[in-house]
Length: 486
Image (cartoon, rainbow, N blue to C red):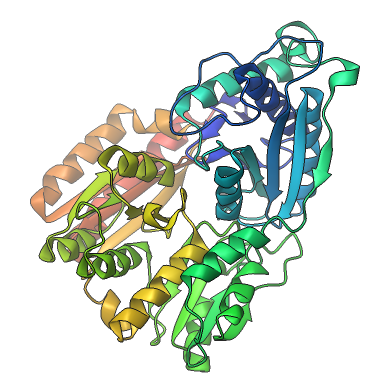
């Protein structure tokens, strides 16, 4: 992807993402579909490339003749640009001999669940929690997992070739003959099986439970209410009227303030906020207090541990998770393993260690022991409800085990945040911050994997020290960013 003349990798921590008709164009979507279908044909697996292990490098298969039957499931969230980009991507799939299966508007975890059960690769058109002017292309393997880095690198090389060369040269070899092009078909009811899977994990007879759902005007706007209503809960739904332009606008997992107010006004037992593609979930307790991904991890992991079903016993979280989570788990004899930011890295660590529960403070939570391979907002809500029911105590009491240290995050815009972080002045400021914090706090400085931002998180027992350290590092980043502007 090209952003303001600065070349950056196409694939971030969560697929290809950018502002529509700037970084993310129909031409790019078509090239991505073309490259994916050609790659899958070259593997000879009918679309069954997986994300658990890398496939051989080299995306281009031979042109001409009958193409292998390669089905790719394609879903989208509710953004206005979704139709346009999906049409372009499906055209690219068909041009390279793929068969596009349109499963309509549905959450990313629903698509991942379908991909794993059908043993087919899948593509989600979504920018997750980003505002509506963004969109993205997430490629999932036939195990429902995001693709390994080397597979993404092979796809990126083919995409760039298609964009640079049109239908000639290397790009032309991705195409098939006229009579071998693929077709598309629609499966509007594909999500029904996923909903049944969730219903089996949520007990019926919830007539006494009042739940408020904030659907962020996103992909869960039908499924989330249907799930809880089927269990008998008294459901109030907000932000479930998508118009293509209001997804994630002042609502959902990135802004649960309206949900918290509604829970209190309704006298509800619980509230759940999802993001645009419903791979995140943030909860709200009966007092209107926000329960973030760290507290959700603690509540669900401790529930499993007390029943003797937590693998390890250990949990995986990222470097952004609060030290309060680590201490809460340690008191119960549960280890915490940290990894890079991104649920793909949480999943990798879970698989490498043979563990089952992990996630991010932002609300991406993975439950491998529940049969899911990605962050799943609806499944997370189900698991929280189950933990509350088993404990017979309100969520406020269960979540109180996490005594959070003061923590703040700031973001600094930068066309190339990775290069910005390498600047000597920035590194010196970060080193000085770590020395000042010592063992009483932490600092994490990283390039965003989904936006052109450098992110800073500081955590400290001393709130005043936190403010000083955060301010110093952000000032160094901003000064260097100004210096780097042309």
